[in-house]
Length: 112
Image 1 (cartoon, rainbow, N blue to C red):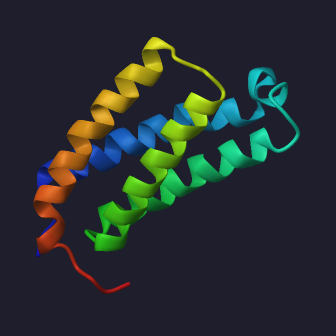
Image 2 (tube, helix red, strand yellow):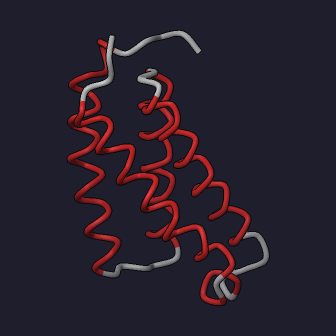
């Protein structure tokens, strides 16, 4: 099945957010949280990128990884107590994206 346009838009928005969040992995604000926090945040950003690749190819594992990454990233920001307007905006957008992705989940390919 051909990928719907809305999934393409979600992927493009995801790729853009990755471009802007990747430099934060090396920011002093993340480094001062602890020794392993930059690595943990880097893993979250990388898993978000991989989930966008899975969504681009219209695979179910992309949605599953997107959900896992969303909850892990939300938990990460709650633990470090970073409740900025960007946190609320990204959480709201992610809820909308998850709703759309779950709508198309059954039509996606199960194959790797």
